[in-house]
Image (cartoon, rainbow, N blue to C red; front, side):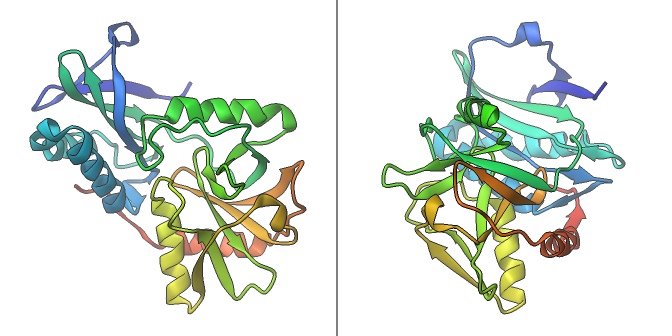
Length: 264
């Protein structure tokens, strides 16, 4: 059985919460990242994204956020693989912070895509409020054999995966494409790190308006904090994708080199 515990921040420490204690609450923002033996990838970016969201949506909670983060990080064991989640919630009595300590699931290296049937996002720039609805998208495309749903705009352009960001290699292999900055989506930490590695290797990173049907013979990466880079092996009822498993393995090794100790 996997280990997981929910904690609530009291202002100075974390105390366990039973699920029967969870009441009328809504998620203001949340963030999570993979931890491997006390190290994480791009953790300061995750924490900064969380702080910015709290500052924007719950300014009265800003004074407590840094202490909460410090205490939460102290609860992550120095060994093992974990996927902790920090969250700020709105309740009838004000805002509170919670920490979900949980084991990381097994890392997956491939994904099967499907175009999402609709876009349920209410706050496309903030991680957290729409997580349940986005999980609903994954469930909706599962009967087609897909493991990730790709949200498209009303104009038909790719926005993001339900729990991921998409990076595309065109057939030339001389540059990588990411979703154009004009399309609202969560700023992806893992995508940023992939782009940083590309820049360091002299590979251009180009923002694009991309339609699924135009990606035939392109390689598509599904990137996230949980799995790193996954190679999309197919797109249900969509384009025939190119695959380069060796390149995917190489870039996952490059990402692993950027793991740093877990500190606030």
